[in-house]
Length: 491
Ligand SMILES: *[C@@H]1O[C@H](CO)[C@@H](O)[C@H](O)[C@H]1NC(C)=O
Ligand SMILES: *[C@@H]1O[C@H](CO)[C@@H](O)[C@H](O)[C@H]1NC(C)=O
Ligand SMILES: *[C@@H]1O[C@H](CO)[C@@H](O)[C@H](O)[C@H]1NC(C)=O
Ligand SMILES: *[C@@H]1O[C@H](CO)[C@@H](O)[C@H](O)[C@H]1NC(C)=O
Image (cartoon, rainbow, N blue to C red; front, side, top):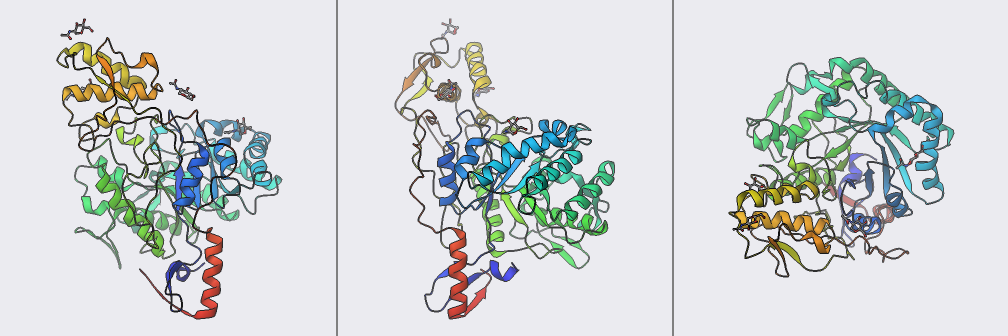
């Protein structure tokens, strides 16, 4: 599909504006949560919001089953800790593909398009851990896809972190692969090219901003910067384009100027760091979605890449090694609630998850009789609660960072209580805690009630969404173009 097909078409006769074909809204669906939303609810959430591509970090059988016959394209990930096994023998890869891919394609009607081998295996922090297993694992998975007779449809690739390339000159045109893995990257790129598979990279403007206090803030977003980077005839107004084109330069320099590139992850968190908030996340993701809707490429490559936004829902048990923000990348809260509104095109806005079952409407808080100034005892209790529950919103600059000492303790007690399914013994804390039915939420700090994952929706598809699947829209669009003639414009 050319860029024309990504544009909004204005139809004289019906006066309606449709997105005609080619368009894809992708999103990452991570499940590292104490109480993951039931897969059926998530699939409905994806459909209701027009996401037609989803990336999974592992071959979660519940998620795959729910994605059957959904019309959603699926990318299935392989965690890094499986790479050694898969690199070790073709048979291991054959077993993996048979159990986690082929069966779901043929029996369950899951539209699997990609297998993502490893997850940022060449991240500098990992040192050499996966440098010797990633490429052999990719080769064995490719062989297994061929053996299963699905290699024409299911492509194998590797989700790479953006530090596999860098610029020799600080300008995008100076892009090349990192010296220590240069030859390995060339081998992988050549292999992908031979198998008509895309390269995949994760790009994080938020991390650029978060790690460098001197980073110009508007360069992290999309709407023009006061400090553009001028690179020959090309001008860069945001780090996303500059970063992406650094990769394109690296590909050009090494003889692969046309290799398709997919953005495997890009997004903005809402909590857990100074620049992680609702306003910034909304601004970034709206800018990103506008680009996707407009089919906008970069200065160096006009064809837009496929993009998978990171992320769909918050994950309350992810490692916080990268920072407290790591549990807050979702466009939706842990329960599928809308965090901030986005214009998703065609006048549509985000809609929350439906049919979510919650635990009872009650919270655990510090009791009025207990004193928050009993410092050591309170600190111990908070420490205990936060060891098992997610307290990342309590940090400095976070959504609950301004609570007074009493509410601070209450927040921690409640998170523990909810994480423990509101079980009877989970709201005690040396008799300092009590249960209330009055919502203690305040000033943007949300005291959650956990979802009840024991009550999952019954079998059978949930009521179908009001919007037709993309293929039907595409058909309608094509028929109308043929009948009516159109003008097309970039929104
Ligand atoms: C995938 O297949 C392998 C067999 O190779 C199996 O051990 C594994 O549990 C399956 N599921 C996932 C999520 O990887
Ligand atoms: C302080 O905490 C200790 C230990 O839980 C408790 O024995 C004591 O009564 C508390 N004092 C006050 C004033 O709450
Ligand atoms: C909230 O609790 C944490 C953990 O004990 C503590 O570090 C922080 O100082 C507390 N904040 C207030 C305002 O009491
Ligand atoms: C909460 O309930 C769910 C569903 O019954 C269960 O799977 C989970 O282990 C429980 N969590 C805790 C911490 O008890």
